[in-house]
Figure 1: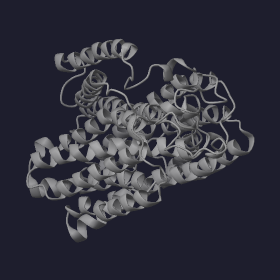
Figure 2 (figure 1 turned 30 degrees about the horizontal axis):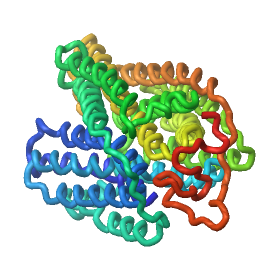
Figure 3 (figure 1 turned 135 degrees about the vertical axis):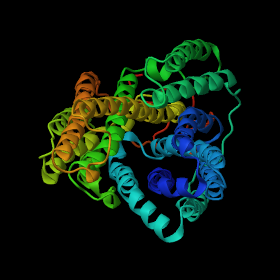
Figure 4 (figure 1 turned 120 degrees about the vertical axis):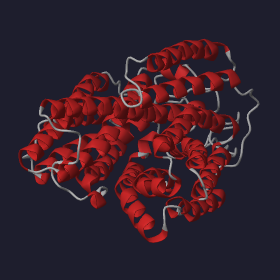
Length: 503
């Protein structure tokens, strides 16, 4: 969780420091690549890290991912040009891909699903602290120590995480006798790269119908077809297709995580914009603006997790989660220039309740629907769907927002300027146009969540795996998945089905 916090804080801290970075290094035309390089490297490396953890031992691979992230942070802090910063941010992204995938795989290995509810509040707290505290830390560090410390602040935290995990994470290294799926890695990287680039550029750098964007989407589709063909015939696939076909809950959870990524990323970006531009909130408090949404995430995750641990039942939570998110987004879509911050906070709280019921529970249900040997690959796949959902959501929402705002402003005879520089009728026209553009974003988000409610209703409730120690007289293995030895906490031997899943 310390390493997860490290990764989440970094994204928020760097976003706050970007204006200062551009002022020092120049290269304003390349600013988008500072984010794109990180996102692209994170998404492309996530399934690779997850599979390597399954094959070669999750502890050693996890430590390596944290070390790569810390090295990328040190290099980014020492960058002397925008090009160097982009390259070093990609290195950071590689490490972040492993942290995101393997943190959940380790939790899934150490804690059986039936007992995992007690820990869900902690992981939700990490999300909340990273989202809210990141901009505050970024603004403070940049103002008092310079933008380079927005990266250097990761070094002591990363060192603590490395030493802590090295000595206290009780997972002896295990190496499997298996060939690495290089063809699958190459194709998966190509597919993810094409998809992330297409969604990042579409509607901003190029129109959605431009040949570049369409070619990237076509390349992604062709790559998926080739990837499936390769994964069917290799001995140890990068992303085993059995996790999608073994039980219907896993593909359903993939859909829900995709929708969760779309919603969370979209709200985190456009809600503070609306509050600043229309409601007059201070940009320096951008992290606190999300508090009404993130606080319920922590509370509801705690409640839902404890109920799940006590009863073993969980289907109600994704249903409630998608329903609350749909209702909250519908209410957010009704906001206009006269909506108060208090009312906005209430609508945000409803979205937070839905997110709390949904996000962590989706991971638990997905992990419970696969065999222990596939825990790393399954956790990586779920994390990847959330990342892709966020990337697609930001791109689509950004395109909708810009088109609606520009159209309204042109119709009213105003240019795309900040409300603070306008007076009288021009200001009123701008605020109305901004509210209208935001309305379209949240309305589309509500429709997407409403469709995902069907996936939640189709979830099949199967018994959650409980705690089961290793057979008498035999030591527990690294994680119950890396070798043919008996499994540890709740884990079957490699190649065996989990005892109570329906896969």
